[in-house]
Length: 324
Image (cartoon, rainbow, N blue to C red):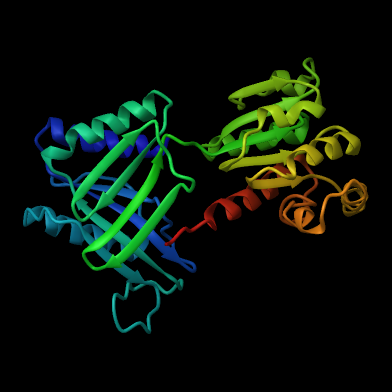
């Protein structure tokens, strides 16, 4: 997981008696290049790890972080950057629209044990919840909130940012054919934990699939048992037949998932949806299904179809911004 390198850089700074500062995007709106959870470490010896969105905005924020390190500032700071050249305040010198709020969190020796616990949690494939506030940083292992990232601000000096740790986005690909193989390949590069489900075990594309973290062989009418609910779970249905697609979709349509999509032509989707309506599935439920799956880029090959699906999944993943 990419955040693990961030925490390890911080730990190495403690080990080398080097000061460091962690920047986190805690909130964003519009077309902001930095999304909630983006992190970057700036060290007093010049190292930069991670990103909060790039461009001139990031350059300016890095300089601000360096000034804080040079002046040995220890108080956390929130900084808003507005990506609009007509803005009167907090202008980022970027024109993409939107804005983002960045937390500047200087690391101190007292935080070392918390950072070590976070690293142990991630490396142990466990979960936890980290909280940043004006008073410091805290971590609760074996715990997680309902949402991955939550920023709450009451006033300038009363705020908190909470983030689940050790939770990977998981893609469940129901159907291990050529497109399933291509989707596995792309989503694995995007740091998804990939699970492929099929009722066949000797299919060549399953044997060739070295990108999936798990391959599960079960009847399609049992998929509900191995796909849990959760806002980190993404499901792609692409079995060898429209009947099997319908069987899988009927089991999963009531689950709370980040994404549920089904591959197929408009005609096939219409037929499956009509059958589900006759079985009592409401129109409201059906509207939540991405079908036909993927962006309409006139895809023909498995690789092109996989790219269109991955793009749609990324859009959904990056659109979840929680504020209280």
